[in-house]
Each structure stands twice: as structure tokens, then as C-alpha cells.
Length: 219
Image: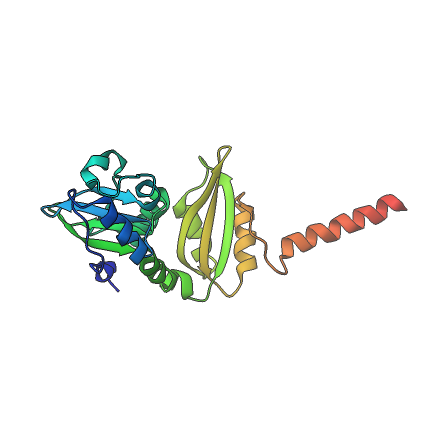
């Protein structure tokens, strides 16, 4: 499904000469955190519901509060991941969309974009989620792919899920009949396994060795 199929026009944007009362009515009628303001198909920005409710002059025109406008939007060719970042960065559930001429053509609703993401093969195909960690300067995506594919597995996708103290954690979605063999290979390449997995042979071996050592010391 093309994400542009989800561009909406149900909520009509307001104008700079619209009143604060018009904006409050819009928020009362729709479950949105922001609404776009346009003139001649050009986006001026978006007002947040919290900001509108701080104004006590309902008869004021929105132009009198232009300093409260938030400047965020998406290009019509934006990907789902780019859209999710815009939603998160601006704490919004609606994103104005501009075409290549920078004209306003509608908006994305967070619920629709989340639905698209949650029904993608990355999310719904049966797979294992593996999180590995290594020094940022030492890991490579090509090496990660090679480790997975050398174990007759398929990499559905991956992303950097955390960066801290020169280390990175990479979350992997893997189709495999033997995730433990892949984990063993990652360890041989000096990756640390962060995620927990049932019947982890390596951890079971460490546990057994620890128990044996403890018994030896108690003799």
C-alpha cells in the first residue's frame, strides 16, 4: 500500500484571519493535537491545542498569535519511518503534507501511519527479534548481514535502537529455524547478545559452569 493513499482532507485547515473561537471549535470537534493554517495553499504552520487554550481572546484572529505557530510538515514522498519521526519529534497526531511545489495537499493521521507500519511484513512476518551490541566503530551492517545469511537465515530488517558510551545496540528481525546458532556466531565475532532468549545454549553453559565452580569451592 502506498502511504500517500492515506493523505486526508477531512479536516479543513484554517486561515490566518480565522478566529481563536474557530480554532477552539475545531479542537472540540476533532481528536487532534494540532491544526494547520494555510493561505493560498501555502502552509504557515500549525497551532497546538495547548497553545490555543492559553489565549483568552476568542475574537482575536489567528494572525495575532502567529508567534505560536509550529513549523513541521512532511513531503508527499516521505516514508513511514520518516513520518513516525516527525510525529514523535513534534508530539503531534497530525502532520501537514506538502507537494513538490510546497503546496498544502492534506495531512497524515498518526493512527493511519501506525496501522500501515504494524501491518508491514517487517512487523507481521513470523520471525525472531535479536538485539546485539558492539563498539560503534567496530560493527558493520555488511558483517551483520553476512553472519545471519551464513547461517541460512534471512534478515527482514534492522535499526540502531540505542547508542551509549561508544556502544551501539542493533535490533534485528530474523527469519531462522535456529536462532541459537546465529547468536553463537555473533558472539564469535565479539557481539554481545542483549535480548533474552529461551534455551540460550551459551547462557545455560555459563550457568552450569558457575554451579559446578560453586560446588567445587564448597568441597
